[in-house]
Length: 507
Image 1 (cartoon, rainbow, N blue to C red):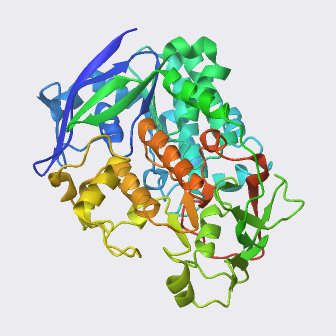
Image 2 (image 1 turned 90 degrees about the vertical axis):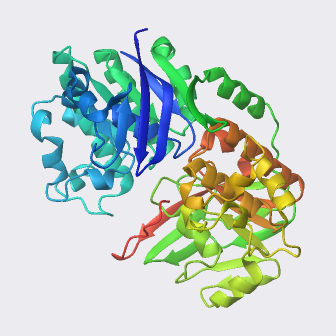
Image 3 (image 1 turned 60 degrees about the vertical axis):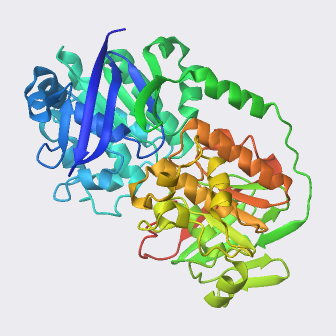
């Protein structure tokens, strides 16, 4: 398989952001690029795609200034014939053009298959689903994040179909394109990706934290497997490098977990949330069936995981923030221990009795939970624990989720300089160290590499053995289904009674 090897250096104001000597890109193949959040996957990909500004960043590729790379025929062909689907689509769609106009702008105007691509990406939506947004001028919260991701993906697939007519260099990069999609829509996207790859045999990079992508490719498209490479970007001993990730590392781990028998034994109930909650003019309802025909209270039991499922945008994050007293509901009834909490409960009661005492929550985004200007060693300050943690205990705790024993230098790094994956591990440890009855996990594997994700699952299992009740919301269904008995799976549904301001949290 033909490969291009890059040496890449990226710095900002004298501070190194990326330094790698062995970044390899296989031609006419799908490279699934894994690795923790913030480690450099996007920056490296943008550099190769010719999208960085040499005036803003000090970039060198193969020892030459970035301006020289941008003038090379390789970079010119990539920019002309390729496409980059950005992780955050809002900032890369033109607010002055409708989505329909952007789908047909420039070289996309004559590209084929628009209708078929959109139908596939909106599979299962109402017949007016995609048509209802095509004439919208994109705003920060309209359409939804998932819809914007699919629009950008549709543009890429149109460009890919058009690229079959030429033989110049092309590169299609999809940066976390399914982060806001449920599993069904993610699979529709992956199906289109493989279909277009088969037709064009172009060069594709898929950046993702979703390891269930490996299962999809292996089980559904075995004939394409020889053209799919899994590579993981790692930071070890302060040095960034790329390693081959064997699918069997994940699949064998998953198989062992699936072999474990999970029973829905009826242990003591520590929380009961009544099935109907009203917030922001919407009614959120909970059921045990996927259609929501039979609403039931959400139960969290000692020593068991409760799994709350729903497509993106329904309100999973909203409802757990309601349960924590972080958002005021219009109507709600929740029994926690011997107390009942409702829309009438004063926020001070949650602060005094619940936060960090009866319940704790791992937020989906670590930046939401951590002070960016504090140092690593200060992350555990202020927690409601009887005895303050000394440095020895902090180092021991960090060692549970970090590959190497933290050095004194690491303890003194400010949070804002850490990678996304490092922040998420601190975010998790901050809550795991507390001894609350209930632990709420909102996308706990967000931004983690496989080794860290496996350690987090092991930590959750230890908490269960200690009698903790755990509530999980996560798109990583393939992984978390190995922890949960069927009897403990619930589904969230939403109905709107009036137009309201959007809930801006990713749900």
